[in-house]
Length: 397
Image 1: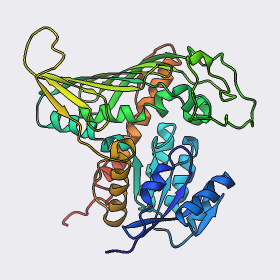
Image 2 (image 1 turned 135 degrees about the horizontal axis):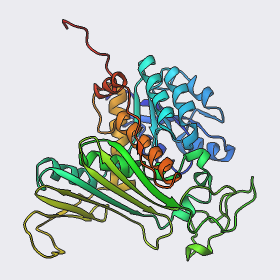
Image 3 (image 1 turned 180 degrees about the vertical axis):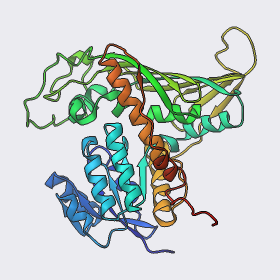
Image 4 (image 1 turned 90 degrees about the horizontal axis):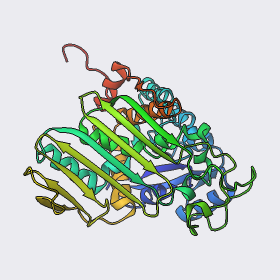
């Protein structure tokens, strides 16, 4: 068996489960260095992984010659700086979604990866979720004909706690939740529809969390954060001292292949639910739950009245681990990419396009719904990543 890859992890907050998934000593990889601004967090992480280096300075971690690759799971507004530092240091890097908080920040990362020739991977783990893979496979084999429209709804029951009690609530650090939270869903819409968003318009507002009690700047989060939850949403307290992102939004998209799509997001619902509906020229499909054992139904006969059971029911494959096994699968793919290169299910191009669509939609909703064009990605840069980050072959070879 090949020696374990030495992994460095920068950022051990809400996505610290990535470090757990990447720590497999004797089975291909091990976390050997950690970086986090919180001394207590990095001390506990070092003990958990037996890391030989624990630092508050990511640049010190990147200077460690024992590292084979780096995972960046820091707050969104730091991705550009830290990812570019890692790429400049020649460390293959995994950047947790979203790639950046603007299209330009994403393009800076892509240009740096292209110039340095360092491998870049982006953590859109929903592409590795069983329900998304199942829906994509059914569409690809023609069960509903050619996709023409996609509708996605996302009910975020824990939104007031996850997104309004820390830095996510500050638009300077996220642009907005129609980018930060929706980046996964926009990427899935692009995957299922087979195209990228070209034009958007959106509406949204801060309907519930704008007037609730906030913590003073510098005040720690409540002791029971993400363990205890208030209900109803209007009973929530101790919000972040800056709250200026929308808690409800709707977004309309026209894709470059003509598909029309819609996305809705709400952060004060009683239940957590994500629903994708795809309608094609010969039928439609829809997921009912997105975890292992949940189902996808297909309707491809008709016309009839509504038939709740559909024509065919498919069960999402069973899988263990966080996010329905997607975190382990995405780390598997990243490690294979570090070792061997080649094509991956996740894509820096699709990651950039989901951010660009979310940014344009956020501009639209803050401009009263005015439509915006999504800035295209430079053709040469797009080609480089679509070739698996390999230089363009010379003529005659």
